[in-house]
Length: 259
Image 1 (spheres, rainbow, N blue to C red):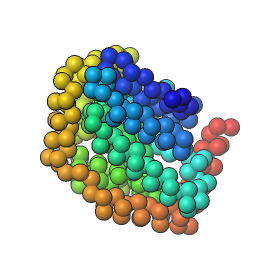
Image 2: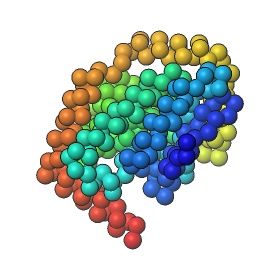
Image 3: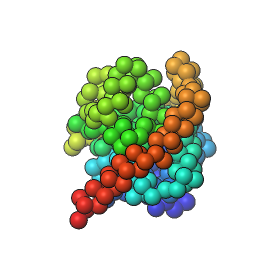
């Protein structure tokens, strides 16, 4: 299959999904989301001898800077809700994948980009990479399970702080809090990610799959009713006068920066 907004490749039992909109900081639009889901389905369906591990990363200086604000700012209610529903399918395709999925955060990871990384089984990060859930600054809340997955990995106190303030955090802080597994210097990032993935891929694939299932069971899956509540609340805030005003303001400011 030909992809427009991602790169997909397989080598040495490692599948690579690379977000490929570097001029837009890999911001995710509808088509890109569909392509990511399609690629994850291909990973899931592949035989263990062909793919043992999947790595998700970004092209350029960003992992993913969230949703494409141009598209996001101009959605109808129906388009917004369809976008959110598709997003939940994306995160489920990561967590429910039979293969371990590793996020290689090469740069900015905000909003939906950080939520993708949180859905992965492990997270590698480039030194000083910045990440966070800044939706509160747009009069919104995270809508891709961020309230749930960040709390599971950080605990409620720190998750509340980061989500309620929208504060940007560094890879180093997330490493100290055990959200990021490994930090690599910029010049050695790709080499070290490859080495990390290769070591995983050298292990028995069926054992990796069982370990993934068991560790997920130990912390429990994301509660579907909580995800539904999160999505419903975001829909209300998105359609509110305050939410729309902030989104339009952010969009206009992004246009001015490009002039």
